[in-house]
Length: 97
Image (tube, rainbow, N blue to C red):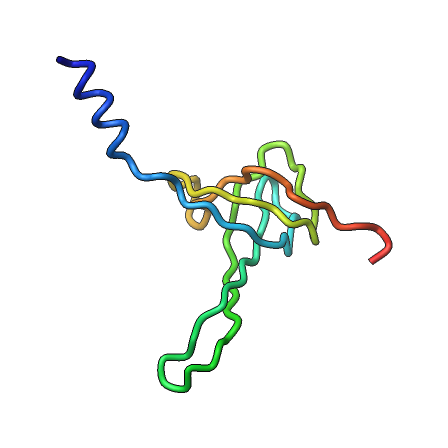
């Protein structure tokens, strides 16, 4: 009976939120700033606008560099501003750019 309640509790947990964005800063110790853009329709004028927001994410191995496209996942609060962790680096910025 206790196993059933444990599996039900695990099933009822929500999936972690995952976002994709571009690293704008990697100057801090084990912290990166990721800018995520999304499209939003204006409520009155119905024009599609591009909205961007910055998220602070934890990068333990310091893999991400400015200009990289990364995937971040939500986590417990790690500091005053950090609520995200680096999941993976999708593409790296090329040196030619």
